[in-house]
Image (cartoon, rainbow, N blue to C red):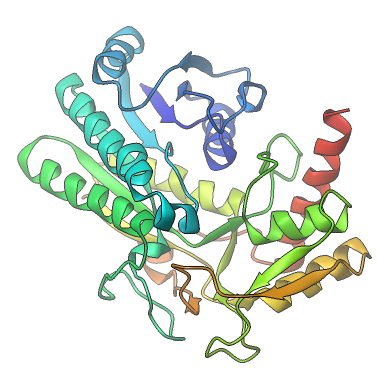
Length: 328
C-alpha cells in the first residue's frame, strides 16, 4: 500500500508525511511548491512535483507507485483573500479537488481523506458546533471546501471508494522535534504572526475586530496542535482500511480562546511585550467557532496529547526561532 499526500510540502501536509513515514508507510508527495518547501518533505518520502488537479499526472502516479489511498491537503487557505479573489479559490480548491477525485476513481484508489475546514459552518454563535450543525459558510474559502465535501459524498455513492472528511479548526504549533512547522513567512495564522512579532520579524501585529459579541470583543477560536490533528488523520486512515464507512469529523479540543488571550499567551511564553494594534474586522470572520470533538474521539479513539495553549504557543515559538537560524 502506498499513500499519496497532496500538498505534502506544506505546513499540515509535511506533518502527515512525518507521521506516515514514522509508521513505516510508503509515501509519495505531490506538490507544486507554490506555497510549500521541498526541504520540508521528509527524506523517507518520494517527491513528485506537479499539480494535484492534473488528472493524467495523478493517474500516472497511481499506476507507477501502486497508490491505494490519497490524503488531500493541497489548496488555498486565506479567508480574506478568498473574498477578494474567489475564482482563485474555486480553481485551487474546488476544481483541483474535482479532478483529483476523478483520478482517484479512475485509478482504483480505495480511500480518500480530505482536509476541510470549520469555515463550512459560518456564523454559529458562541455554542460549540457538532457535525450536523447547519452549514452556512461565510466566505468563498468555506464554500470551496464544502463543495468538495459534497463531491466526495456523491462520488462515494456511485463508485467503490470510501472517504473521510476532517473539518479543521485553528491549527497551530509545530512538530515537538522541530522537524516541521508553519514555514511560510507571509502566513496569516494568528499564533505564527504573534510569534514573528515577538521575535522582531514584524514591527507589530493587528487584532482584527474588537467589537464582536464575545467576552472581550475579539474573535474566539478552537486551537488544535498540528501533531494531534495529524494523529486523527492516521487513525482515520486505519479506520477506513478496516472497512469503516465514509465519515465527516470535526477536529477540535472543544474549548476556545480569544485573540487577546492568544496574544497574551505569546507575550508570556516569549517574554516580549509585543505590539498588537486594534484594527477593523476582516471580511468573512465569524465571531466564534469551536467544536465538541466528541465524534472523532468516540469513532476513532482519538486522545489528544497536546491539548494545551501554552504548549501550542511554545512549539510554534521554538519553530520560528529555528527558522531564523535555518535561513541565515
